[in-house]
Image (cartoon, rainbow, N blue to C red; front, side, top):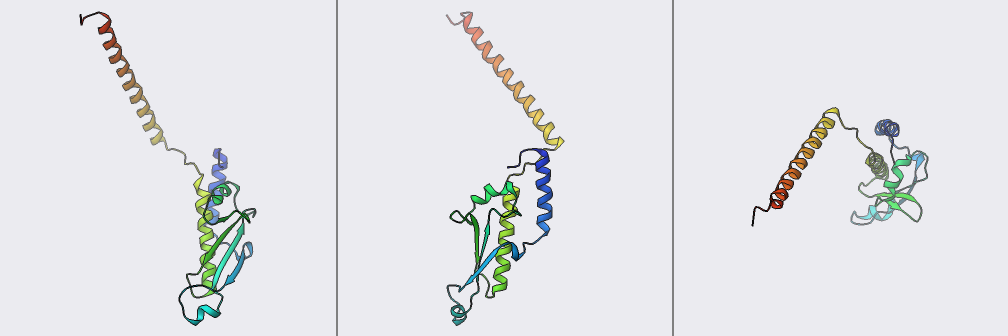
Length: 158
């Protein structure tokens, strides 16, 4: 979890670097199998389905993103890893790239989920104005209620 402004700045720096990079195949475990569904005889003899497995204990995954990744549908709790498959394309290489891009997007969304944006000066002034207006409204309401109770105490309704 990102808590302090310095941690927030470090997290943003990591995200900006990671955004422009792609995940190398050497950091993940890839397995291949035959795709299911229609496609003729090619489906029955070519291993085009790509399955990517990446353990959450990998050092390149940021610590603040791991809790969010554990809540992801791609998380396999039995092996404590992310499991992503692709059967979209007819070639194995394209399915590998699809899996890697899905993993990249998943880690990016998990890494940015816990970041806190610092409010601008304009937003701070607006909030202060709203707080003042709320306090003034509350005070007016209390005075109105007090006047109602005072009028009852005088016994004017006998």
